[in-house]
Image (cartoon, rainbow, N blue to C red):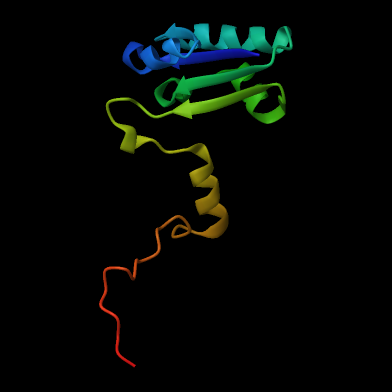
Length: 116
């Protein structure tokens, strides 16, 4: 199984130490070529891609997301702004279950207990 990480050099430094094959700042064409190659060769792969690179994807990315069982793609938040990360599944959950579905419930730990 191939382990690949694509994105900013600073983000990928740790993945390189873990043994991932890294691709620093690939163009949309390079990303598409890499993904098409995985499909053509029927390779098993875990592909970590910085979220910003997923804004302009091609047919091979869409094919992997919809049909492939041998390639797993995971979006990574940007290193400089991890709170900006929005997993694609969040939008689907909000559409299906409503806009408040992912709100955290109000905690009761910090409220005083009411006497009986």
